[in-house]
Image (cartoon, rainbow, N blue to C red; front, side, top):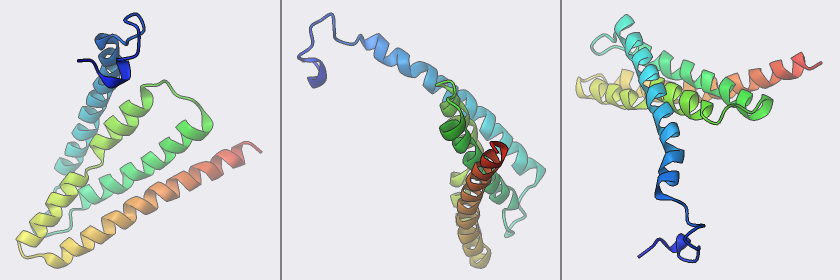
Length: 153
């Protein structure tokens, strides 16, 4: 049985199973490479600035806020200023920045703080990270738009 969307196509017009996969292979590859780069940078930040037991996880907090700011700048540039290569957004936006910003570590940090009897810092971290990330992406996007408008005068 064939897929419903290809049943009515003549054999010469059906997409090859290799062409469908081949179109996604470069995207998956650049996301994987970018993710490895971003995750390595995040890990380096955690080694450089380790969280103290029961303390506020500052490295993860600033990685997430800073990464969100870069996402704000990047998205304005690639949607409003120029048309990038088709693999740039998956590589940098999804891969590098997705691997760098770490909401999974954020969740583990909260669980660890609560589990070790530090609910206050856990709740502060829970709220502060979300607020900082949203403010960073919004503020960076707005600042980038204003800079671009100023530059065009």
